[in-house]
Amino acid sequence: MPRKILLGGLFFLGGLLTLQAQRRLTEATLVYKIHVDDTDTTTRQPHFAEGAISTCYLKGANSRTDLVTQAGKQSTIFISKSAQVVLLKEYGNQRYLTRMTLQQWEQSNKKYREATLRFLPDTLRVGGYLCYKALAGLSDSTNVAIWYTKELIPLNKEFLPLAGAVPGLILSFETFLGDTKVRYEIDKILFSPVQQVLFDIPASGYRLLEMQKP
Image (cartoon, rainbow, N blue to C red; front, side, top):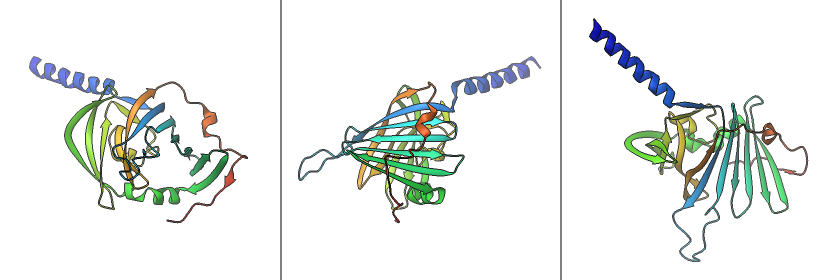
């Protein structure tokens, strides 16, 4: 009997430690640095995304992602309650606003939504967190690598195309900007409150653009 009690206590302690090791993310700011492995070999000019920064703001079920590159800035605002996605693009003095339905949002991410994931035993520390590797096979037959941690569990699953496909927070991943494969890697995670104003949709100052058909 004492042995059974001891074993039961150990299992309980193990489960408690697992729960304590995980942190549920309801509000956070994630800053990713973007790396391009190759450059244009003909002109030897760096890719427009080299050195770019992607900042994801998570607040409950809402999210906003600001992608800042040499070409300009693009923001993707996902509003869960009103079931809409808004794209803001700024190139110098030119500003554009595009509204998307959830169906259009899903269609634009179709190749990622239909990806088949293979979870691998590889582990790596990224940003101080223990990460696990997954390989995503996209519908166009390309493969991208993902590194995610189980220590942070985001409530929002829309801020990255494959965020809902892994049991944790993605800290490093490959994706495509245009025809070029790039790698995002976490640089900072801030747990301070995210301002609600970041999710306000501009009422003026932007030219309205219709969503382009694929």
